[in-house]
Image 1: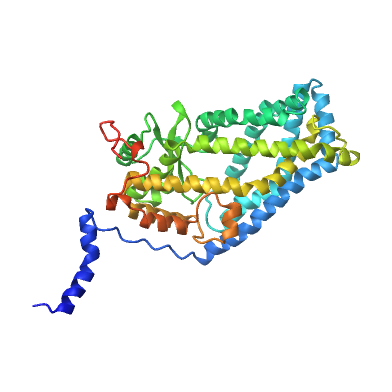
Image 2: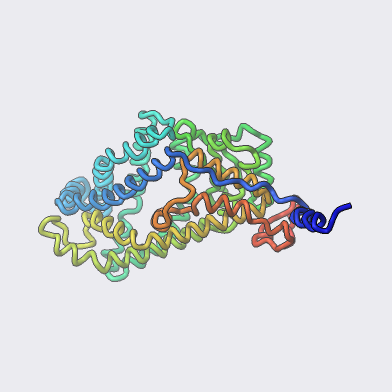
Length: 427
């Protein structure tokens, strides 16, 4: 027979199991946050240097183009190509794009080709890299030709309110890009095709149906020709919405982990994060353009002897506008990044509630950290100034701990979930 002390000890040890049993299941095993490798920490530290260098060069390059008078000479050349307003602006946009591409090329080679190869994160050949860069130059040239004339026409038409009208046009433009990018732009870089694992595809579609995403298609994209990193996303609008998984992710994650990642991406779509991000970006652009409107005219007059540009309505003012946007953007970026991290956290919560698979999501994040050379605990100032997602250490901890369904607590996003018969799941 058990003594008093033995009985108390037995009850104390059994209590957690009894609580778990009363909730319907034992808690899943906790997933430890992986210790970052020395290579991952080097990637993190050198990444900070590259990030700062990118900011400095992003300001210095257009600043040099403007201050040396090169922008004015490009404008004069554009006028010789086409003297009418639209053709001058379009020609200038093409010439400026080529010059900026050439100036950025050395840094781009290091950042997106040499550095990933040095850390074992890339499979991309130099020929493929140059092909992709050429494609990006072509796409950006088309965008410049199609859109650059709009703000400069608005500056001429409404010198005092051009910044308001331009920012107002940003939202429909962003939504238009979201609509066409999956169909027309993304396939220029990689091959998109049906998933090879049909059983997993059906499980993903079933999860999408439960999330209320109807009519979406699942694509497997051949990213292994470019990278060893892993990723997945849901994008598009209306008839162009699609679920996209990198083949590297499918090769390195288990099916349940893939479903957890897809639950996160579906959360972005269902919770209208695309629209919220577009609205936030439009508001940010409004503030940036107003700041440009208030400060650019005085700078133009002061720098005119060197730049050859006196008015904001002159398309040759573009490099100065880009410099000011970069500077003011550094001040505003913590706000936009904080919003992005909040949306990412909400998508993590959505994924956990729809899959109720804490272990799969935590192990997926742990693998993402390992495969992408992530630092789970970056410096707080780096998170504040650079991170669009919460640190992986926080995300793994949240994936381990968030289980409201285990205690019968209501789910925050239950009204978004559907059963297989199409009815809403009761909150």
